[in-house]
Length: 302
Image (cartoon, rainbow, N blue to C red; front, side):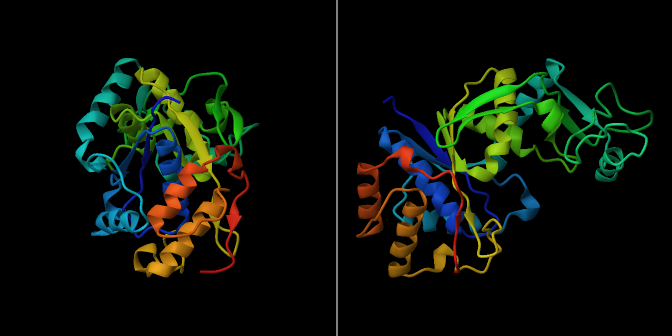
């Protein structure tokens, strides 16, 4: 197998939870199985949501679970010039345009009574595609999505096809409040860091077609994709940083081992025992991507 370059890219908006750990362990296993590199990148562009100290807390937690990375930790907040350059390249090709729409404008357009076939609420109807309304300044910048169906393969989940114009519409690449949007930043980061495989939670599956469309227009390689089972809370909702489960950074040694063993089981990688490093090495020796479940995992409690 060729050497892979994988990555784990958390947002420093709070401590890691079980769902984050599953994504980290899964991406680590995929990368290390081919003798490849595993990078860590902090996606800290949304500065109002960044929690002071959360990035260091995440790194220390990864170390406690035996997850070591290669090279320096990248910070998106220090890569703004790269995103600006990519935005300019798209603008030069006529693929980015200013949008004056507010959230209220979008909501009104989606529910307009005089439309015979209104778009779905989350689909941009193209109000500013042909130019800004008179007297309206640009609030955000949108990517002009290509026509047609985009198809890609996901290793655990199989083949997916999406018509971006019908499902998403032209999407934002720079937000009204200033920051570059996630879709553009992650594409630029993966290309600049030489990432060859993107392994992440299934909640980001819906972003993949948008990212591939940007990759093609920017002339950057498209990595392979693998989306891992989500971890759901007792109520069936996605487990998040605000849920009541004990943050991973606060667990003692016995709980660390128990939680890591659970993460491996969620990934279909069977039983594990020993220290975190021993558990990971054993899982790596037996790693079977084909055993990763497609269905989400629902926990019964903290």
